[in-house]
Amino acid sequence: MKKLLLAIMLTLFTISGLQAEVYDGTVDKKIDWSVDTETGILKFSSTGNNNNIPNVEPDTHWKKHKEHITTVILGDGITKVEAGALNGLNIVSIVIFDNNKGTGNTSGIPEIDSDNFTDTDVDNITIVVPEDASDSDLDKLAGSLGGESGSITDKVVTGDPDNITIAKCGERLNYMLSDNNLKITGNGEMYNYTESTAAPWGTTVQTIEIGNQVTSIGSYAFKGCTPLQAIELSSAIVNIGDNAFSGCTALTTVTLNSNAKIGTDAIPSTATTHFILNDKQQLLLNNNSYNQVSYVRTYNNTNWQALYLPYEINYLDWSENFDVARINNLHQYDDNEDGNIDRTTIEIIYLKSGSLKANTPYFIKAKSAGTITLTVSDKTVTPIDAKNVSCASTTHEYTFVGTYQGVSGEEMMNNNYYGMSGGSLISTTNPEYGLTAMRWYLKIDSKDDAQFIRPNRIKIQEIGGTTDIQDITSNEKKHDTYYDLSGRPVENPTRGIYILNNRKVFIK
Image (cartoon, rainbow, N blue to C red; front, side, top):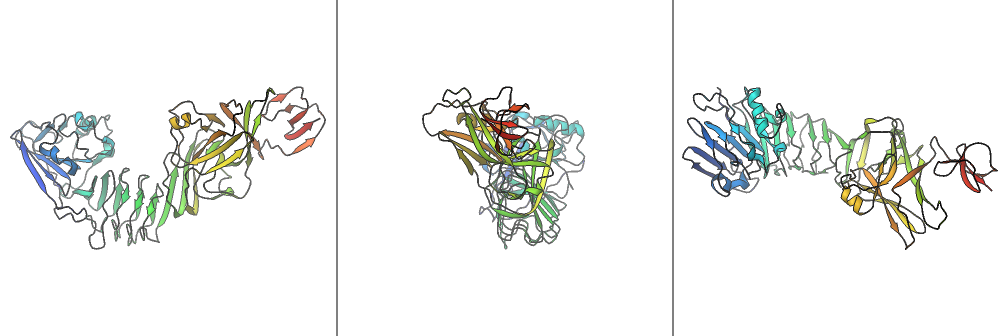
């Protein structure tokens, strides 16, 4: 079989400020190991048949250098990785050579006991395998990582076996470069580079894949990568360093899934910046301007829902897909006239023109269920978490609080907060049901000691929609159907205000 060769960079790692060191040894008199602190690579090799990497005690052998290790190479002669041999390393990549394991051992993939990953984020591991690895070998690896047959394909990297470069680009980050295709895996921040100390992958990179736990793009990381045409960054990115993509003359689109802090000259002015929010992510509190902003949200029904966005939008941009309403007031009712509040409704007014203001609680209702993407141009995103709108009665303060970070179900329940559900505001009673970002919640505070029956549900009273209540008029009782202000039919109305034919009427 063709041996998978790995080109390892051996230059002084000036970016981290640490001089490279290599530690090595032998265990069980037949397993050789070495740890390179520059590349973060722990490499095993041996000769002969049936050579298993054993478990070793913490702080001995290779585990003594675990803070340096990000990659494990299983080289020639390795048949199996015993239970616990890799525990405590929190590796981000495994490289498997096309092993020559002796007569009778034809598979190029050693067996790896799944116990090695009990304290490792297996979703964040990338595996480099020989190009001719069989499906059965890949399934065996999938089982080691706790997955089903065929579930490992998104973790596997193959490439020219003579041209894969792997090394560290952050304390917990690796890069893999093959045929000018770059993949960065791991978690945490990328190293910052400088004009004189360039990134190790050079300027010929054509495609870049960055893992969803990488939290920053280093300064000057991709400066001058002229073949690079497009890049998409995950919602985990919180910072894009100075000059990160400057000089990338072919770069046309930078897609961002978070409003990360963008450094000086980080993105060429010729590239379109497209910021995408979805209805699950937490939004960072940075201020940026973008050529395009998209909001992606899944609507399971056509009921009223909460909306809280960090940029202003013209109503006409929403009118085709949504009804939108603003908060107007809250009303308290003493239905049995015993002096206590029995019922509360919230009054909302449909928007028909103008704009939705940034960082302001609104109601939104999709005209059809499904996932809807709304894209607008040239927007400045200025998120302000926990901005609120308040309404008040003589006895209570009602505060609508927006959030870009979300609120846990436990916090919602412990504080008696209300969230939108089924078209009404519901008092949260289950700690598992939290509030996601780009929403708002309602909190109620008492101004005095007046008795208050806290409602489980606060219903919506619409103004300006198809059930428009136009004004208050003085009329005698008529033979048409009357409704009270909560929308319930009243057979024999007495003195008071009612709804008749979509109009408020006062019966003397």
